[in-house]
Length: 269
Image (cartoon, rainbow, N blue to C red):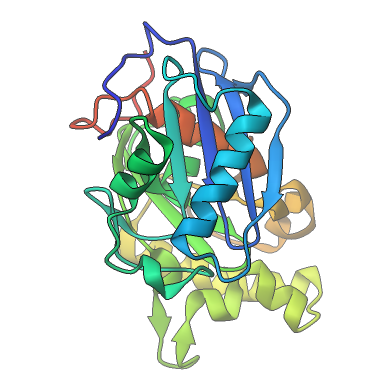
């Protein structure tokens, strides 16, 4: 059950960002879109089975001092397609999450209401409310370049969830785009920034052709090195680095925790 408290009532919320290697959390100032607390991080349990991930989330909430504070809304980001609280895929986590009632599982385990959403979607929310895409009309596409490629599509401030543009395919590569162009591919194949940028050029050219966006935002930890590779790209669409980088999941999840669920809107007041 997602929280229906409004941002006008709550000035802060907790965001938890569950990833394949780490689980991060923090208390967020909802007016400024900034962390009020230290960022707490624990390793994702080996195998990332639901019960073990729940235990790890309990740990980060205890470290933040909000485990028993029901008055602070809680949002959770997860690397999967999320529909009506159910996870329909599993990226770098146990296959047990496929078709799993994740939101209910966490609500029962934590004893509180939460808002559960796709990790790239919440990163997009963070950037459109508080970051690089704030005030941009039309279609914004955020991509997170990491182990894979996550994506968020936001049109006139409203999130179009679960876009999964990292799984676009081109016949000449015979694999998903993320297997060819994610930051992990650069590390695995020891590519230079310039050689990796050629793969990104292929990827963004294709996404640009399909969707004609008004802005690309590049997120993920590699966005702090944006000056190393964005200059090699030649696109019709403006492309900029994300502002919130590795904190985007925490900030976006916290922000969605106070949104009206039916709207799933990123409009800033």
